Length: 333
Image (cartoon, rainbow, N blue to C red; front, side):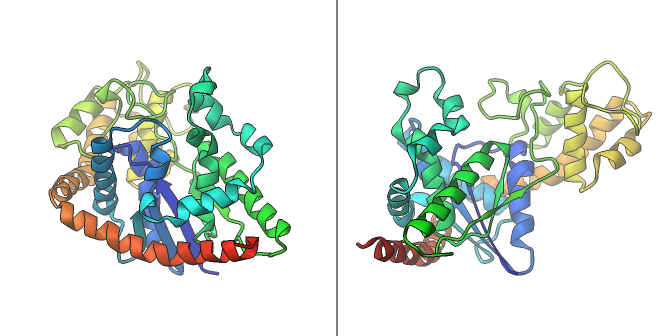
């Protein structure tokens, strides 16, 4: 059976190694699978659930696209576009918002985390974000959605909304019920300064992350200064749950070398941390520096980037506008 993949990335700017290993690397692998159609969306409507500087947002949309292309996504193999350019996403979200139930949304833990203590001041968009996400997915008859732990609950909501729509209007299988694609290994890359915290662009220390725009010298310096511990490199049998920083570095090495943690531990067992860090730095430079150079090159080609988005929008519109038209007919418009 052929697969239809949908996934989106917020244009937050300054994408880093965690974004690459946790999502984009997987996107490229899925794109190259046989009998798989991929739709990758820069979710700029989701981005405005919190305040955005308009100039920064426009810049970040292009930078996210440049990062996609530099990492290996191909606009001829995948549909790549920005969400706001396809009106069906907003239309579909309203229709599905009238199908979703307050009780379902009240259970969404991510809203509680992002809104914080004073949720009365959070935007309505932040609250209804999962309904827009459901529209994003369902408009393309997606069969599979790559999700991390933080989005699993939203995908379950998407499935609930699709089932309720199909049952309420007696249209079995009109909205396809998507399955989750969970990346089992290396989906959560941690900070280089604290192995208990996720790598994030919001961390005030630039030394906590490898940015996909970092050059060779920055990469080497950041790995050299990355936190480890006073114990020797682990042996093959050692459980690393109490050594989060060491585990994180080994996971980065394993993901980049397409190896397992066990093999990586075997490779470096008994060696010095300096030897391991040198090898990790070399591998990062080999994989990330070409991406960094390509991003910088593409950012100087705004017309080319805009043309890719325009082409992706035309393809996405064909799918999404037809689906919304059918939804309208079903509900009586």
